[in-house]
Length: 199
Image (cartoon, rainbow, N blue to C red; front, top):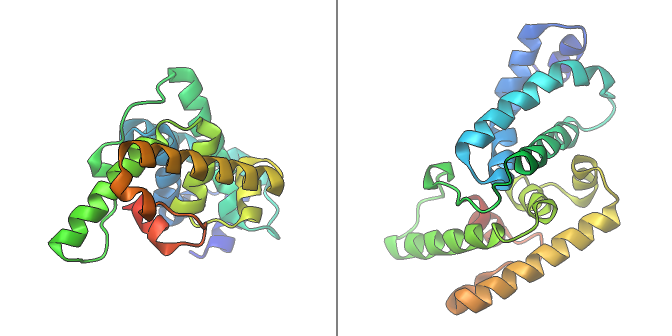
């Protein structure tokens, strides 16, 4: 079932269509959530909550708008709610949460793994709203307009959060991992930065 048809049927109350949307988007929602809550078990719970909420919330969705940013607004809100509820901001993400990266030499793989580990650790020091901005930009590849929808804020606020978050990440990496400092992304369009964050 195609996304638009699944949305229409889901808006009409079709549970099978909700299942189709789950198949299309659950991994993306999970990646956003695990990037914010930084625990796989919590991210799995949040992902389930997102799609439960989606079944009723989707009636308010405008088919003329892009669906992923709208869906990720629910995911971000639920993830931040989970952090506030558990007050568990600094639990490291499990290695099992990484997605496989393209084949590289053992030396390159080791360097990339070290970079990802250091960036994930640095992400844990960010405020949740700034972490969410980084996750959406680098884990999901959202542009500023899409991030504004997902985060429920203005594009200027999006730019500010990403700028602050990247500056803070660079400061932390320079302090704790000087050899990796130059590899830290400076531009949101950097493919290397996306690889480093998503693993």
